[in-house]
Every structure is written in C-alpha cells, then in structure tokens.
Image (cartoon, rainbow, N blue to C red; front, side, top):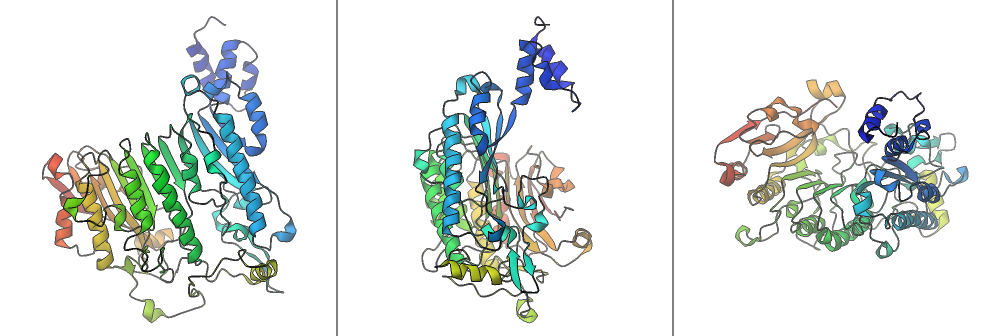
Length: 527
C-alpha cells in the first residue's frame, strides 16, 4: 500500500467519519497512513498551559507542519470554598497575573523556534482563562456554560449575606501581562483571536501580544471596556489602551483585518452617563482618536471593525476637512457599532419618559468619580464587609423600564457626518456600516422575541458588493440592485438633515457615478 499516491490515503481517511472507527490505529500500518492520521490529529489542537511540556514532546519538528490552529487555555490557581464569598484582592490578582504571564511567555518561547518556511503559518486562539475552582457553568469553554449564570449571586436570605459571589468574585479583576517586552517574537502566528473568555484581561494585553507577532494578518479581540460604575478604573484602563494602540498599531505592517469588540452585554441605562475621560481633559475621545491615527497608515489594512464607546474622532480629526491628510486609503470594509453612551458623557439618544418615570428599586446609585470596586479596599476587613452586603443594585448597565428613545441631533449628526466624510476619501471602500442598538416599544417583532431592542444605523455598499454575514443584512433589500451603489437607513422614522443625507449619498459617486439605490428598511431579525 506504500505505493499508492498520498491523495488516495487522504481521500480514504476523509470517508472514515464514524466516531467508533479507530483512526489512530491506521497510523501504525505504514508511513503514508501515519502522515494522513497525524495531519488530521494535529490540524487543530486544544492546549492547556499545564500541558506545555507534553506539547513540546509530541509536536516535534516533523509534526509542526500539520498544525493549523492552537486553542490555548490558561488555568489559574485554585481557591477554596471558604473564599467564594470574597472578592479577589491584590494578592489574588498578583498570583493570577504571574500564572497568566508565565503561560503566555512559555508558549511564545515554544513557538519562537517554529520555521514559517517549513511549518507554515498558524492561528492562535486564546480560548479561555479560568481557575479550576470556577463553577463549570461560568467557564466559557465548558459544555456546562450558561449565560444566565453570569449575573448570579448565592445569598443566604436568613442571614442576608452572600455565601457565593459566583463570577462577581473576579468581575473587577483584570489579568495583566507582566514584562511584555521580554516576549520573544513569534513569526509563525498569522492570526490571533480572543473571544469571550471566563476571566477578564486588561484591554492592552492583546495589543502587547500582537506587538510580538511580526507576521500578524488578522487580529480579532474581545475586550472589557464597557459601562461600569467605577469610572476611575475604566478611565485608567482606557488610558493604558490608548498608549498600547499608539505604540503598537503603526508597527503591524502586514495587518489585513482588525476587529476590536468593546461592547457591553447590555445596551442602555441613563445612569451610566459619566464620560470615559475627565471633563476638560480633551475635546475629543483619546481612544477613538488613537485608533484612527494608529491605523491610518497601515497600507495592508483592508477590514476594520470597531464596537464600543466612541465619538466622531474615530472617523475624522478635529481639523478643517480640506486640511486632513488622506487615510485608510486601502480600506475596503469599515464597520463601527457605537454604544449609545458618549465618551464625553451623556448619550446619543434621549429617553422622553425618564423624568416622568421616576426612581424605583432598580434605580442605580449615583456614580462617584473616585469610588473603587470591592476588592480594591484599603484592608481585608473592609472588602469582606463589602462582599457580605454586595448587591447587584448599582452594578447593571441596563434599565428594562426604558421602552423608547429618540435621537439627539446635536450628538448624532456630527458622528454621522464624520463617518460620511471618512468614507468619501476612501477610494477602495466596498462596504461601510455605522450602527447601534436602541430600546423600542414592544411590537409584533420584539414581542415575539421577548426583546425590546432594535438596530439603528446606516449601510453603504459599492456596486457588486454582496451583503455580509451579519444577520442584520438578511433583509431582502440588501441583496437587490447589487450592481449599483446602495445606501440603506434603519433610523426608526428619524427626520434626516438634508445636508447630511446629501453627504452620505455622495459616498462612492466619484468612482462609480451618481446613480444610487437608497432605501429605508427595518433590519430587525429574530435572534
């Protein structure tokens, strides 16, 4: 059988999909069969930091070329049942940082010897970070994971004390990568992903890691910059993120696709209206401005997706339009999902019923500019007391009583105008989206899904560009008139400023002509 072409072995192996079939046994028949089975076995690897020594033994030089994807899981130190009712403190966070850092450094030292020319490129996915003591239903990589348990508390109502904080124990802990400059360069990694994971990592960590990936073409990272009542902590993390973006992004010289997810699980609460940077410190959002500036000159960048709390400076600098140097000149796909809260404070939409509705038991406590989260107190006794009396009241960034909001023209018009002007000077643009999610009154659609929220935004497509995989683009109108320029609005009856509408209608006209298909649609789809 050694004389058969290797493709024949590959074809036979592809037909043996019955789980009961002992494929590994085929590897003992002959070298061609061994190559087939190893290629299948090592194509995608799930690797834990506790197994790194074994990984280096098994995935030796001859097998590296078979590896396409490494799904990396980092196991943090265990903890006892007696501390489930306590928030992590600095000593806990420090111990976790050290284990996390060691796990990343050891993996990189293992991968630095891989030869791109012999072994090819791989995808690295930080699949999860958790402690073995975390409840399985809280671990994102566990088959037992439940989204409904994320906001759960176990309270003894007889004593009125918390006996298990569940994921709130580490809710305000953020893993740090220590000594990032000592990470070796790893050319073999071309794609780097961080999805939803159990523990939170500092938002600059993915970027610090990307700085050591000289071949990085695709970066897709879920971050943790969302509304929390401890605004000083959030501002500190955004300042760190600005620094990392400014320093690292311009050096990602072969990057083709970048996705930064910085959106909250929830989507509306007027109480979370404090700005993400101190009043008077800046006239624009430093993070939005840094992302645009740092990506502007990446000539290889084709696809940029941002979701989070942003302002118009992510699209355009605060300069007269005729003085702006061209940027994003090779970008083909631009997607921005903006949170309804503004970085400067306040919202892009306003709730007409807020004053009439008045407070109730769910009303959030006023946000202090200096308050620190539980687990950051000056002593253990204070944090222990905070854990005993901890309540979800004041922690959530969602108000279910908000049924309808209206656009704030003074905030939204400049944002959309900046988006339009950015798109106008992008000659390679094929698709652009600016959208958010807002509360809507219960109706036939929302009542059927049990949700009272709806998309709000606009989409542009160049001639020949099909709709994307986004469920919002499942509306039939997105697939019609595909050979023309198309502009779609889902703005719930908002009356457009004519100058603004004219500006958006001009996107792509210089290259493709003035003919435009423009439609107002309802992109709501069942989830």
